[in-house]
Image (tube, rainbow, N blue to C red; front, side):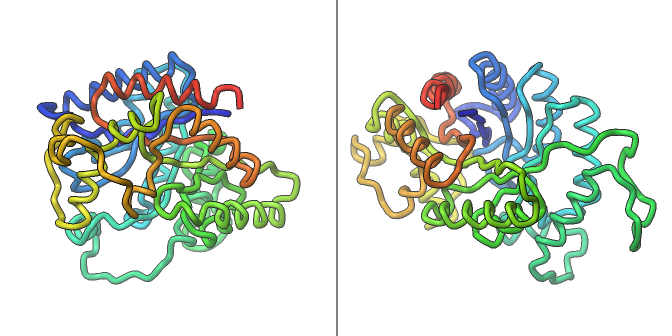
Length: 332
């Protein structure tokens, strides 16, 4: 099974944004060396402990810092943007690094302030038009000129083949079905509502078989958390981000960096607290437990790839975890 990584570029204590970006480049080089298939970066806004407000720029830099690994976004929040502009950026990246660029896209709410700041027209109220945005983006990515409508004759780099490879990030059956109907690859969220994974994958496979008979499903399961030699160690490593996530949800607290494991343990009286309802969304497993989980996901839901979002900030720990993840799924 292919392993891919999503990096949120969390700050370790005392690290500046510039230093965290350099750590990301070093981690990407390590990931390529140990056999990671894709390296994606997130799009988040107004998150003080992360250093990646512009994933498109990071994709260009990461692709230049590596030589074989696929690089992409995980993913562009299409609800905020013009599909035309997103496609222009994506096709430019594909021209610079042929055959190595992915574009993962989805939708999310970043918060009242960031969502307002991202809007060009701050008075407009829009309904749910995500399906229309996705369809338009896919059309622009093809490079083919529009044949009718307001964009008749328009195309983006029509002298190039279509691309880059589009992945729709889905967490509902509706999004899964849209992904299949359009013949796209599916990145299924396993950490927003994990219980919906079977439903999302089934809707995708059914729609793909109906609209594109004979096309093989491509399902990447996105997990977030930590993996270690033992579950106890994984839970310990993930504790800093677990505490920060809890603070964000309950009090809107955005610290400037993730605490160290030792600082997080001190906040909890020296031991990792029992798993609560929120933390069940995240994956804290041993290598063997993750391996068994992915075997089950392959057999029951047709998953073909693992996309793991690293839930820690320490650069040394992240490199070790990437190597363990490769080991966990290499021969599945």
